[in-house]
Image (cartoon, rainbow, N blue to C red):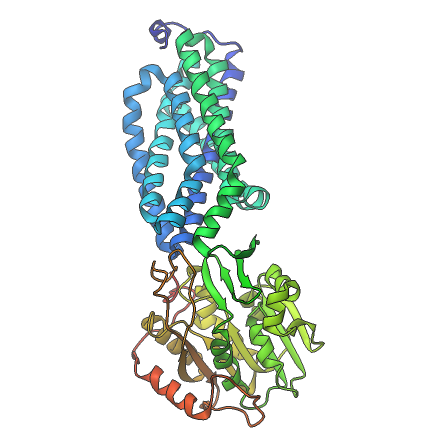
Length: 529
């Protein structure tokens, strides 16, 4: 398809050699940016759909790097038709990379699995990315011969700078403006245009008419497919979301922190999901929040600090004590707090907690906020934070974090921590207990059970099955003196806790005891994915 005599004669270019090389390097820049965006899209989506972000990132990047080596070897076979080969590779990469997010989410929503599709997409994208540099090396050398080291240096410089641009564009431009699905489709369109434009214009005299027509039709077809997918992205997301969460999704919002989905209401139990994980179910949340809050309130509780808990449900329980004078809620996601203030069903569930004048809210990372030396001391600190099984939560369950929390705690204050599920993640639960004790605090572990609902359909992130989530919640109560697991004399009427129940909850936790565990630290995280 390429005039073979061009390998022996000068390439006929529409511009001088200098601008021609600049155009090739510009194409390298754009294609490298797109390639890195595909990688980041896969890592982000796999972490959300499969969980355990460290493992998923390691698997994806390892598979892609291996596949890039395979692609480089395969590219040797098409160097004789480098221009057509490069345009074809970019068209295929635009199609596979652009549709990868849609394919992964479809596999997850309707088939309950994403890992095989994730690995397949990572391998295919890696092969195509790996084929780019050998073909570009051939093209740039045909424009003007130079020593191999100089050509490699030019190509890799453009490639690395393009990767930087793609890495910055993904979180700061594509995700906020388009979201993951449409962002991948837009990236694919840019990728296809860049590859085709460079070859069809700069190397047009190097192509046969049939080659030009083939490339034009192929790239128009790719752009048509991507455009059609973008047109149906909204209905697709709604259908996939219904497949995962059921048909009563009322709110679906991607914030700067997480995806928030709210289902139920109008007689059905309210369910609140963060990044696909069921966080709150209106049918059973009272067991979790009563167990987290009320044992910690058995003492002086004038000033209370809630770390996390932006849904306002732990706050609801705290405000049931009339002698509480101030409550500070520190949550990273300001949009969640806004939703807890404004959504009628969520407001009804938290009993208008944010309307209480005793409440002050702060939008900040809990670790950074404590580290900044915010005023204390607090009589009670409640750590109502994301599940410890999530990698990004690891620092919030570290010895350093609990040291900062202890610094903000009054001398006779109490710290209550949600520590995951003793039945589903026993090692993590007891590691958190060991981490708290490593800071000099004394602890009493306890748990509560009785989950009444799970995701209405689709796999639960804990185990991949809709009916097999954790059956209990684990907590640790800590203070400088040996804490007593009891209820305050002025405790309000509770639905799930009594003094006798607390004794049994403590005994149930101790039955799963693991000893001799090392604490989790920032340098050596032992919880999280």
